[in-house]
Image (cartoon, rainbow, N blue to C red):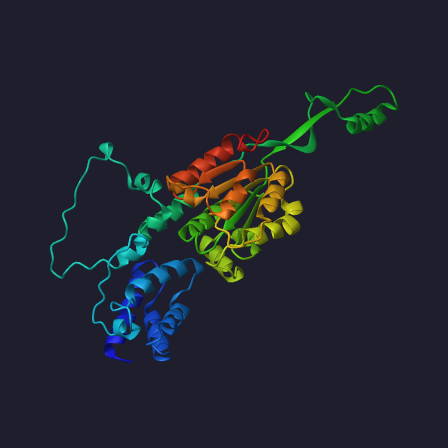
Length: 388
């Protein structure tokens, strides 16, 4: 291996660490060993080798792909080996690059340069860092902002408004006579008249079922929403979480672990279709057939988190969405694509889902998550379905 190639491999590893990937000093040695064992003139082999040793978490796949395309690009468009021998890599910033990757490519300040002046502003006339962060898109957050956003999400409280369930509870002011209790107490008077006992419907928060898309098109949004799901499962008992891309996986028990990092690491090992394509029809069909009767009792509310970009050509998606809609109290579609003002239902999957949901809401920043929490607590859990 040439010295320039080794230098670039080490530099690439450091840039990935700066973008937020969990890489230690030994990661550079692993990357050098992988580069020495493959044909570095083959771009596909170089990509596969470096990804195998440098990507430790499923949520880092997208960042690695962006960084690899930027760093190991071919300036002349013909020979990938030429780019490997460049002493320095100068990268323009395309508009669709994650902010974490862009900040990792920022040139360091020259040695001995005076520190930048620190501007002091009156706090009474400015927004705090967290307030600015709430309106920023998850995809454009830096590594530091993303870590702060995770902490904010974990502190979010969600309380669903209680609804009436089928069970009854003793109530002296209830509207129905409790015949079982009345007859039981009449035995004590040996058949003489006993006072009537009454009952009323019990109330309880409805179960919450979350179906979250983890395909490649969801990217950074699914990572933040997993932290949101973990806080939901920790705060409430009746929460069921499912992840899907090309297949459906129940991760409810995994997310009940108190340590969020450990829970997400276990999710990464259990779920085998991270960052893949989206098979909405197959995933909803499996949920309706296998899990619907188990988790959709007592007026459950379903949150469907997906961008609706289904790669299946099977026209049965509308039927599965309709079945899911009729099985729950309310079906809410959370779509990160709604962040765009010009969003239009052009994709086949989007057109199939829209007629069968009660609410279509954006989910792309902290403000949208807080608005979702307020809506769930203010009235979605009670009453009949509203207008779509």
